[in-house]
Length: 375
Image (tube, rainbow, N blue to C red):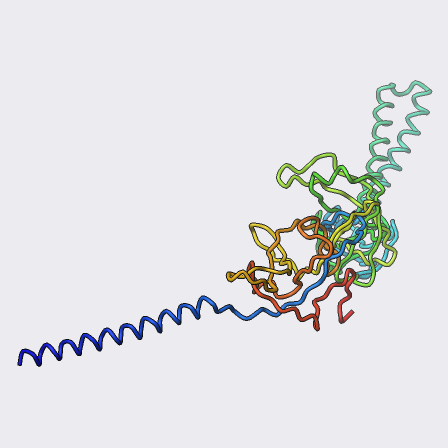
Protein backbone atom coordinates (compact mmCIF):
# COMPACT_ATOMS: atom_id res chain seq x y z
CA UNK A 1 0.00 0.00 0.00
CA UNK A 2 2.78 2.40 0.92
CA UNK A 3 4.77 1.54 -2.22
CA UNK A 4 1.68 2.18 -4.34
CA UNK A 5 1.24 5.66 -2.83
CA UNK A 6 4.93 6.51 -3.40
CA UNK A 7 4.65 5.38 -7.01
CA UNK A 8 1.55 7.51 -7.60
CA UNK A 9 3.27 10.54 -6.04
CA UNK A 10 6.31 10.06 -8.27
CA UNK A 11 4.09 9.84 -11.34
CA UNK A 12 2.28 13.07 -10.39
CA UNK A 13 5.57 14.91 -9.79
CA UNK A 14 6.94 13.70 -13.12
CA UNK A 15 3.76 14.85 -14.87
CA UNK A 16 3.94 18.32 -13.32
CA UNK A 17 7.60 18.69 -14.18
CA UNK A 18 6.90 17.69 -17.79
CA UNK A 19 4.02 20.18 -18.09
CA UNK A 20 6.18 22.93 -16.54
CA UNK A 21 9.04 22.29 -18.98
CA UNK A 22 6.69 22.37 -21.95
CA UNK A 23 5.18 25.68 -20.84
CA UNK A 24 8.65 27.12 -20.13
CA UNK A 25 9.85 26.42 -23.66
CA UNK A 26 6.60 27.75 -25.14
CA UNK A 27 6.87 31.03 -23.23
CA UNK A 28 10.54 31.40 -24.11
CA UNK A 29 9.74 30.87 -27.79
CA UNK A 30 6.92 33.43 -27.62
CA UNK A 31 9.23 35.98 -25.99
CA UNK A 32 11.88 35.42 -28.63
CA UNK A 33 9.28 35.77 -31.37
CA UNK A 34 7.92 39.00 -29.82
CA UNK A 35 11.40 40.49 -29.58
CA UNK A 36 12.06 39.74 -33.23
CA UNK A 37 8.66 41.16 -34.41
CA UNK A 38 8.55 44.67 -35.84
CA UNK A 39 5.51 46.71 -36.92
CA UNK A 40 4.83 47.06 -40.65
CA UNK A 41 6.19 50.21 -42.34
CA UNK A 42 3.96 53.31 -42.46
CA UNK A 43 2.96 54.60 -45.90
CA UNK A 44 4.12 58.21 -46.40
CA UNK A 45 4.87 60.70 -49.15
CA UNK A 46 8.15 62.54 -49.39
CA UNK A 47 10.01 65.34 -51.13
CA UNK A 48 13.71 66.00 -51.65
CA UNK A 49 14.65 69.26 -49.95
CA UNK A 50 16.20 71.92 -52.16
CA UNK A 51 17.21 75.49 -51.51
CA UNK A 52 15.21 78.35 -53.03
CA UNK A 53 15.58 82.11 -53.06
CA UNK A 54 12.61 83.80 -51.43
CA UNK A 55 12.13 87.58 -51.49
CA UNK A 56 12.76 88.87 -47.99
CA UNK A 57 9.46 90.00 -46.51
CA UNK A 58 7.62 90.52 -43.26
CA UNK A 59 4.08 89.26 -42.70
CA UNK A 60 1.36 90.63 -40.47
CA UNK A 61 -2.37 91.07 -39.99
CA UNK A 62 -3.93 94.39 -40.89
CA UNK A 63 -7.19 96.32 -40.86
CA UNK A 64 -8.41 98.68 -43.57
CA UNK A 65 -9.15 102.18 -42.29
CA UNK A 66 -10.64 105.11 -44.20
CA UNK A 67 -8.44 108.18 -44.55
CA UNK A 68 -11.57 110.12 -43.64
CA UNK A 69 -14.54 108.42 -42.03
CA UNK A 70 -17.33 109.81 -39.90
CA UNK A 71 -20.81 109.04 -38.67
CA UNK A 72 -22.74 112.02 -40.04
CA UNK A 73 -24.98 113.23 -37.22
CA UNK A 74 -27.46 115.97 -36.39
CA UNK A 75 -25.85 119.11 -35.00
CA UNK A 76 -29.07 120.44 -33.47
CA UNK A 77 -32.31 118.71 -32.48
CA UNK A 78 -35.21 118.84 -34.91
CA UNK A 79 -37.70 117.00 -37.09
CA UNK A 80 -36.48 115.52 -40.40
CA UNK A 81 -38.18 117.52 -43.16
CA UNK A 82 -36.40 116.06 -46.21
CA UNK A 83 -33.85 113.33 -46.99
CA UNK A 84 -31.72 114.11 -50.05
CA UNK A 85 -29.56 110.98 -50.37
CA UNK A 86 -29.78 107.25 -51.07
CA UNK A 87 -27.97 104.62 -49.03
CA UNK A 88 -24.68 103.44 -50.53
CA UNK A 89 -24.37 106.32 -52.99
CA UNK A 90 -21.32 108.44 -53.61
CA UNK A 91 -21.57 112.11 -52.59
CA UNK A 92 -19.36 115.14 -53.02
CA UNK A 93 -18.25 117.50 -50.28
CA UNK A 94 -21.03 119.99 -49.54
CA UNK A 95 -23.90 117.91 -50.92
CA UNK A 96 -27.12 118.25 -48.88
CA UNK A 97 -28.00 115.05 -47.04
CA UNK A 98 -30.84 115.98 -44.66
CA UNK A 99 -32.90 119.08 -43.98
CA UNK A 100 -34.50 119.57 -40.57
CA UNK A 101 -37.66 121.61 -40.05
CA UNK A 102 -36.80 125.31 -39.61
CA UNK A 103 -40.26 126.91 -39.61
CA UNK A 104 -39.82 128.23 -36.08
CA UNK A 105 -36.36 129.61 -36.80
CA UNK A 106 -37.59 131.33 -39.97
CA UNK A 107 -40.33 133.06 -38.00
CA UNK A 108 -37.73 134.16 -35.46
CA UNK A 109 -35.54 135.38 -38.32
CA UNK A 110 -38.37 137.52 -39.71
CA UNK A 111 -38.91 139.10 -36.28
CA UNK A 112 -35.18 139.66 -35.82
CA UNK A 113 -34.84 141.29 -39.25
CA UNK A 114 -37.73 143.64 -38.42
CA UNK A 115 -36.09 144.50 -35.10
CA UNK A 116 -32.81 145.16 -36.93
CA UNK A 117 -34.51 147.53 -39.40
CA UNK A 118 -36.13 149.45 -36.54
CA UNK A 119 -32.83 149.68 -34.69
CA UNK A 120 -31.10 150.95 -37.84
CA UNK A 121 -33.81 153.61 -38.38
CA UNK A 122 -33.48 154.80 -34.78
CA UNK A 123 -29.70 154.95 -35.19
CA UNK A 124 -30.00 157.04 -38.36
CA UNK A 125 -32.41 159.50 -36.69
CA UNK A 126 -30.23 159.82 -33.61
CA UNK A 127 -27.18 160.57 -35.79
CA UNK A 128 -28.82 163.70 -37.22
CA UNK A 129 -30.06 164.73 -33.78
CA UNK A 130 -26.60 164.27 -32.37
CA UNK A 131 -25.14 166.56 -35.03
CA UNK A 132 -27.68 169.24 -33.98
CA UNK A 133 -26.88 168.73 -30.31
CA UNK A 134 -30.40 167.62 -29.40
CA UNK A 135 -29.34 164.30 -27.80
CA UNK A 136 -26.29 163.32 -25.77
CA UNK A 137 -23.46 161.18 -27.07
CA UNK A 138 -24.31 158.47 -24.51
CA UNK A 139 -27.85 158.10 -25.91
CA UNK A 140 -26.47 157.78 -29.43
CA UNK A 141 -23.96 155.13 -28.33
CA UNK A 142 -26.76 153.14 -26.70
CA UNK A 143 -28.81 153.18 -29.92
CA UNK A 144 -25.71 152.12 -31.92
CA UNK A 145 -25.19 149.16 -29.57
CA UNK A 146 -28.85 148.15 -29.98
CA UNK A 147 -28.44 148.19 -33.77
CA UNK A 148 -25.36 145.96 -33.57
CA UNK A 149 -27.15 143.58 -31.20
CA UNK A 150 -30.12 143.32 -33.59
CA UNK A 151 -27.77 142.61 -36.51
CA UNK A 152 -25.95 139.92 -34.53
CA UNK A 153 -29.26 138.31 -33.59
CA UNK A 154 -30.14 138.00 -37.29
CA UNK A 155 -26.78 136.35 -37.98
CA UNK A 156 -27.27 133.94 -35.08
CA UNK A 157 -30.67 132.74 -36.33
CA UNK A 158 -29.38 132.36 -39.88
CA UNK A 159 -26.50 130.23 -38.55
CA UNK A 160 -29.02 128.04 -36.68
CA UNK A 161 -31.01 127.54 -39.90
CA UNK A 162 -27.83 126.67 -41.78
CA UNK A 163 -26.86 124.13 -39.11
CA UNK A 164 -30.20 122.37 -39.63
CA UNK A 165 -29.20 121.67 -43.24
CA UNK A 166 -26.81 118.72 -42.88
CA UNK A 167 -24.21 118.41 -45.66
CA UNK A 168 -21.49 115.90 -46.56
CA UNK A 169 -18.25 117.12 -44.93
CA UNK A 170 -16.08 115.45 -47.63
CA UNK A 171 -16.35 113.34 -50.78
CA UNK A 172 -17.01 109.66 -50.08
CA UNK A 173 -19.43 106.76 -50.10
CA UNK A 174 -22.47 106.72 -47.82
CA UNK A 175 -23.53 103.74 -45.75
CA UNK A 176 -27.02 102.68 -44.67
CA UNK A 177 -29.52 105.44 -43.83
CA UNK A 178 -30.49 105.47 -40.16
CA UNK A 179 -33.25 108.10 -40.15
CA UNK A 180 -36.71 108.51 -41.68
CA UNK A 181 -38.69 111.53 -42.82
CA UNK A 182 -40.71 113.01 -39.95
CA UNK A 183 -38.45 111.48 -37.30
CA UNK A 184 -37.38 113.66 -34.38
CA UNK A 185 -33.61 113.76 -33.96
CA UNK A 186 -31.74 114.70 -30.83
CA UNK A 187 -28.52 116.64 -31.12
CA UNK A 188 -25.74 114.20 -32.09
CA UNK A 189 -28.13 111.49 -33.34
CA UNK A 190 -26.51 109.42 -36.16
CA UNK A 191 -27.84 109.85 -39.68
CA UNK A 192 -25.56 107.86 -42.02
CA UNK A 193 -21.89 106.71 -42.07
CA UNK A 194 -19.64 108.37 -44.64
CA UNK A 195 -16.27 106.92 -45.68
CA UNK A 196 -13.73 108.15 -48.20
CA UNK A 197 -12.75 105.09 -50.27
CA UNK A 198 -9.75 106.27 -52.29
CA UNK A 199 -7.15 106.24 -50.91
CA UNK A 200 -7.41 104.06 -47.80
CA UNK A 201 -5.05 103.16 -44.96
CA UNK A 202 -4.06 99.67 -43.86
CA UNK A 203 -2.91 99.59 -40.24
CA UNK A 204 -0.91 96.58 -39.04
CA UNK A 205 1.58 95.65 -36.32
CA UNK A 206 5.01 94.01 -36.48
CA UNK A 207 7.35 92.79 -33.69
CA UNK A 208 9.81 95.36 -32.41
CA UNK A 209 12.80 93.35 -33.70
CA UNK A 210 11.56 93.88 -37.28
CA UNK A 211 11.34 97.67 -37.08
CA UNK A 212 14.98 98.17 -38.13
CA UNK A 213 14.18 96.58 -41.51
CA UNK A 214 11.25 98.93 -42.19
CA UNK A 215 11.37 102.25 -43.96
CA UNK A 216 8.81 104.73 -45.23
CA UNK A 217 8.07 104.02 -48.88
CA UNK A 218 8.56 100.24 -48.69
CA UNK A 219 6.19 98.24 -50.87
CA UNK A 220 3.28 96.51 -49.12
CA UNK A 221 0.91 93.90 -50.56
CA UNK A 222 -2.37 92.81 -49.01
CA UNK A 223 -4.63 89.85 -49.66
CA UNK A 224 -8.03 88.71 -48.43
CA UNK A 225 -10.64 86.12 -49.32
CA UNK A 226 -12.89 88.79 -50.82
CA UNK A 227 -10.14 89.95 -53.22
CA UNK A 228 -8.62 86.57 -54.05
CA UNK A 229 -7.91 87.52 -57.68
CA UNK A 230 -5.97 90.68 -56.85
CA UNK A 231 -3.23 91.77 -54.49
CA UNK A 232 -3.38 95.56 -54.08
CA UNK A 233 0.00 97.24 -53.73
CA UNK A 234 0.63 100.19 -51.42
CA UNK A 235 3.46 101.98 -49.65
CA UNK A 236 4.36 102.46 -46.00
CA UNK A 237 3.55 106.07 -45.13
CA UNK A 238 4.01 106.07 -41.35
CA UNK A 239 5.74 104.05 -38.61
CA UNK A 240 4.63 104.67 -35.05
CA UNK A 241 7.24 106.34 -32.86
CA UNK A 242 6.41 104.20 -29.80
CA UNK A 243 6.33 100.47 -29.10
CA UNK A 244 3.22 99.01 -27.48
CA UNK A 245 4.42 98.09 -23.95
CA UNK A 246 1.93 95.21 -23.71
CA UNK A 247 2.59 93.42 -27.00
CA UNK A 248 6.05 94.86 -27.85
CA UNK A 249 4.74 95.49 -31.37
CA UNK A 250 5.01 98.61 -33.49
CA UNK A 251 2.05 99.91 -35.48
CA UNK A 252 2.70 100.61 -39.16
CA UNK A 253 0.44 102.43 -41.62
CA UNK A 254 0.41 101.91 -45.38
CA UNK A 255 -1.58 103.85 -47.97
CA UNK A 256 -3.34 102.19 -50.91
CA UNK A 257 -5.05 103.63 -53.95
CA UNK A 258 -8.50 102.08 -54.05
CA UNK A 259 -10.33 103.26 -57.20
CA UNK A 260 -12.59 100.20 -57.40
CA UNK A 261 -13.32 100.14 -53.64
CA UNK A 262 -12.00 96.60 -53.25
CA UNK A 263 -10.67 97.50 -49.82
CA UNK A 264 -13.41 98.60 -47.45
CA UNK A 265 -12.95 100.15 -44.01
CA UNK A 266 -12.96 97.52 -41.28
CA UNK A 267 -11.83 94.72 -43.61
CA UNK A 268 -9.36 92.13 -42.29
CA UNK A 269 -6.34 91.57 -44.60
CA UNK A 270 -3.06 89.65 -44.67
CA UNK A 271 -0.12 92.02 -45.07
CA UNK A 272 3.23 91.31 -46.71
CA UNK A 273 5.99 93.94 -46.56
CA UNK A 274 8.61 93.55 -49.30
CA UNK A 275 12.14 94.31 -48.03
CA UNK A 276 13.82 94.38 -51.43
CA UNK A 277 16.26 91.49 -50.86
CA UNK A 278 16.16 87.68 -51.04
CA UNK A 279 16.93 84.88 -48.60
CA UNK A 280 17.95 81.27 -49.25
CA UNK A 281 15.48 78.88 -47.60
CA UNK A 282 14.35 75.26 -47.79
CA UNK A 283 10.70 75.35 -48.94
CA UNK A 284 8.56 72.45 -47.71
CA UNK A 285 4.79 71.83 -47.81
CA UNK A 286 3.04 72.92 -44.63
CA UNK A 287 1.85 69.32 -44.19
CA UNK A 288 5.47 68.26 -43.59
CA UNK A 289 5.69 70.21 -40.33
CA UNK A 290 4.89 68.53 -37.02
CA UNK A 291 3.83 71.40 -34.75
CA UNK A 292 4.34 70.98 -30.99
CA UNK A 293 4.64 73.29 -27.96
CA UNK A 294 8.19 72.10 -27.28
CA UNK A 295 9.35 72.72 -30.85
CA UNK A 296 8.43 72.19 -34.49
CA UNK A 297 9.98 69.28 -36.36
CA UNK A 298 10.08 67.27 -39.58
CA UNK A 299 10.87 63.61 -40.27
CA UNK A 300 13.90 62.93 -42.46
CA UNK A 301 14.01 59.59 -44.31
CA UNK A 302 17.23 57.58 -44.23
CA UNK A 303 18.89 54.29 -43.21
CA UNK A 304 18.27 53.42 -39.55
CA UNK A 305 19.91 50.55 -37.64
CA UNK A 306 17.54 48.11 -35.96
CA UNK A 307 18.10 46.28 -32.63
CA UNK A 308 19.72 43.46 -34.54
CA UNK A 309 22.19 45.84 -36.19
CA UNK A 310 20.62 45.51 -39.63
CA UNK A 311 19.75 48.76 -41.45
CA UNK A 312 16.23 49.56 -42.66
CA UNK A 313 14.44 52.51 -44.26
CA UNK A 314 13.18 54.67 -41.41
CA UNK A 315 12.76 58.24 -40.23
CA UNK A 316 14.69 60.56 -37.97
CA UNK A 317 12.84 63.37 -36.20
CA UNK A 318 14.61 66.67 -36.78
CA UNK A 319 13.71 69.94 -35.02
CA UNK A 320 13.60 72.94 -37.34
CA UNK A 321 13.34 76.74 -37.25
CA UNK A 322 10.47 78.04 -39.35
CA UNK A 323 10.37 81.23 -41.40
CA UNK A 324 7.68 82.90 -43.45
CA UNK A 325 4.95 81.03 -45.29
CA UNK A 326 3.98 81.42 -48.95
CA UNK A 327 0.87 79.70 -50.22
CA UNK A 328 1.11 76.00 -49.33
CA UNK A 329 4.81 76.29 -48.46
CA UNK A 330 6.71 77.06 -45.27
CA UNK A 331 10.30 78.30 -45.23
CA UNK A 332 12.75 76.20 -43.17
CA UNK A 333 15.58 78.41 -41.93
CA UNK A 334 17.60 75.68 -40.20
CA UNK A 335 17.42 71.96 -39.39
CA UNK A 336 17.14 70.54 -42.94
CA UNK A 337 19.89 70.33 -45.55
CA UNK A 338 19.44 70.37 -49.34
CA UNK A 339 19.21 66.85 -50.73
CA UNK A 340 17.60 65.29 -47.64
CA UNK A 341 14.36 63.38 -48.19
CA UNK A 342 11.60 64.73 -45.95
CA UNK A 343 8.20 63.20 -45.17
CA UNK A 344 5.42 65.45 -46.49
CA UNK A 345 2.29 63.61 -45.31
CA UNK A 346 1.55 61.10 -42.58
CA UNK A 347 3.79 62.79 -40.00
CA UNK A 348 1.10 62.47 -37.29
CA UNK A 349 1.53 58.67 -37.17
CA UNK A 350 5.33 58.61 -37.10
CA UNK A 351 7.84 58.38 -34.27
CA UNK A 352 11.60 58.60 -34.21
CA UNK A 353 13.04 55.46 -35.87
CA UNK A 354 9.75 54.26 -37.41
CA UNK A 355 9.86 52.21 -40.61
CA UNK A 356 8.34 53.88 -43.65
CA UNK A 357 7.27 53.01 -47.17
CA UNK A 358 7.32 55.92 -49.61
CA UNK A 359 4.38 56.17 -52.03
CA UNK A 360 4.40 59.41 -54.00
CA UNK A 361 1.48 58.69 -56.29
CA UNK A 362 -0.57 61.36 -54.50
CA UNK A 363 1.33 64.37 -53.19
CA UNK A 364 0.05 67.08 -50.82
CA UNK A 365 -0.42 70.64 -52.14
CA UNK A 366 2.88 72.47 -52.60
CA UNK A 367 1.97 75.58 -54.56
CA UNK A 368 3.55 78.92 -53.59
CA UNK A 369 0.54 80.78 -55.05
CA UNK A 370 -2.54 78.54 -54.73
CA UNK A 371 -5.97 79.54 -55.98
CA UNK A 372 -9.24 78.35 -54.47
CA UNK A 373 -11.03 75.76 -56.55
CA UNK A 374 -14.23 77.82 -56.64
CA UNK A 375 -12.59 81.12 -57.53
